[in-house]
Length: 537
Image (tube, rainbow, N blue to C red; front, side, top):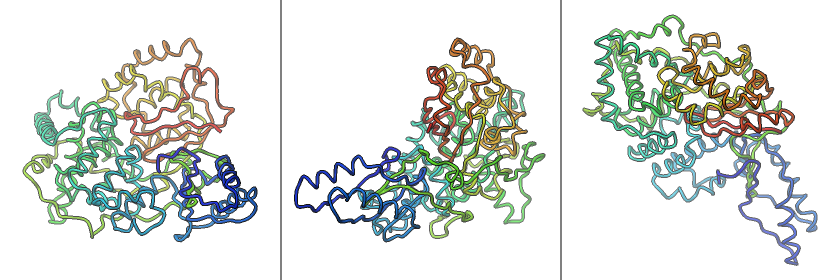
């Protein structure tokens, strides 16, 4: 059901009452080729029933007109339900599964085969079908104040299996809890000795600055779980995929050890605060000099406003209709503040010996500086799911350069220098005279957890610069596309925690760029932690 292509209409059941079989077949054929009304980018709309009567040749037109009428109406649980995106739909479905109410709603009938299974199995099965959407689904669940409850409904084994699948999708093996514990102990020992080698190895940890709200909506869940729990490991994978996707691929055990120490430090600080003890002092100079503040990206617009500015678009999730039909139209994004947890589902954790070994939180361990940046107000829906105008959209073409095998090897080799693909994209763009005042540059800064684009200058220089530029010239020098003009592309960018979509007019297509293969859809990029798509209309 949720694997339908963009702009698809799915009719659950079509009944035609006609005196002749030929008339009924004519109606079916007409509906197959009909120009169904647009529901709006990314939106899913479920229509319970359409019913018309008249001459056979007029029935398709009557059905299309009735569909248009329903698409202009607000939600009516008895007849019409709409969701702003596939992530929003899945978050609502998982919430109803958790409450045991999914089987009571007609619009979930296509997922009915999951309803007889245990809740954990049903939720993990649905999530497994949409792993690339999981960050966006988690953000939507957090906005509904249900992220902790849904995660805690998973069994340890089901959550661990999802973590195994997520790691496999990104091309690495999920480290065991023992491996993480061993790495964590080694890191703390190195930090205690304060050797130059240890200091140089820890520089990458100082770059791990979370986006606004990322740690805020995961922290309540992690504080309720053993570090050895599969749900804990799944959450750390998602956080690591956002913070340092390259390092997650190259050194998954080490990154998870750092994140484990970070959250252990936050939990210890909370306990110390409630008991009246002094809080551990974080050691990240960046956070002490520049306290984290939630700052919206330049010219960011909520998606419902962006949609109004664009006449036609194809989105990350696929517009649908049910007639018994489904299709999509814009819906207001939820604006609820995030809660610490849902009291009905939070359970008290029991520390195991392994969990205790992972909870070592020596104050000299630099990664715990993440705790300093984890307490701002959670990011609103407008910051997690939004869009903006850019004049440098061609910067995203460079993702196809970075995704070539030789470049991926270089990025992994130097993952400790630039642990996120966003840093590589920015530095490579500078080689083509990237316009620093463009909204896309502000967006990149936000993905790296920075307050504004001015802080991007503190990123390390492009690693292996000569090798990178030699490869770019070898691949694209003769085609003439490796020029600053490559970046000049006016378009609209829509983003979510899981997807980046660039929309540009058909006139923006350039034959040399197309022949070089730079404007093809990059798709899932594990070293960026996002699915990227290019759309021309």
